[in-house]
Image (cartoon, rainbow, N blue to C red; front, side):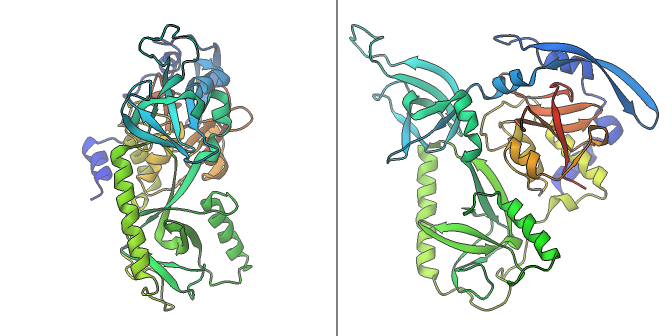
Length: 430
């Protein structure tokens, strides 16, 4: 039995009881702007009416936080490393100076959070404030340390470039999958890839590959396609080498690029050597027949089909997400141990075999179908923002959401009205 389903059954977390332990709407909304803040967020009180069931109407008073203030709180400490010349990385050091040990590397486009800013301390310096380098203490991926501020774009400038730093990956779902020279079942095979491996996807037009594949499905329905009818994704399968794999046997994920620890760098270099060796020795030896490109069709189960009804799936998703309440907010984080607002929703759905965009704007533009707030059900995504989507949360029912709020507050439960501008509700389940 699916472990997540076992957890739901063992805990008897049914729709009627799962939300009973949550803090009331009014208390949660007020809690967003109370305690521990370096400054208070601007807020106003508002009375809202909500229809419950077919006829009952309740009225609640909530504190509504200004959207601009929330966005500032979430992205104020954002940093992105950008390099115009080689090498396109900088060292992350254990202290604010080049004499400190190297703990990792921050590559071009790596996203991180600023923890502190300090001036370099130089022994016997008569004027420590004159011409000393400023170092920024950052957290990026599993790396925490110091980099020179000249390598980083921060704040609003970094936020405006955040979307550019998204990378898409193909995760292989079958034991062996051929990589073909062209996007055709008749094309020769260059090598093969195996289950669990991840390869960067190349998109020539910069489009989210899921959007591209969805457009292909529409075209196929209109019988406008003149190829073999299969969908293909271009991947980098070895250093400097690209090829095509069938989209039927992969899942598409996305993430921000982050800094790497020394240990992670060594592990990735070793994996890269093995892939390059495989690409060299297997070239031309893989199947060139016209059979399906995946010879072994033992596909990883889609967890979203392990539930009797959509309602059961929705409650499973909600209760799974609620397990992580209290975890830290980590901008660009790549697991539910700590991530940002869109990372939380993305990774919760991913663990149920459902692929959605990694960024707020991607979830707003491409996740599921748009519905009204009155139609929202547990497991839907609430999108907030001004002039575009800049924050998302998971709706858990009863007028509440669970969300990665900001670096100060982490993952918590709030009123769905914690910000005034709900620009969309996205149903990705039915």
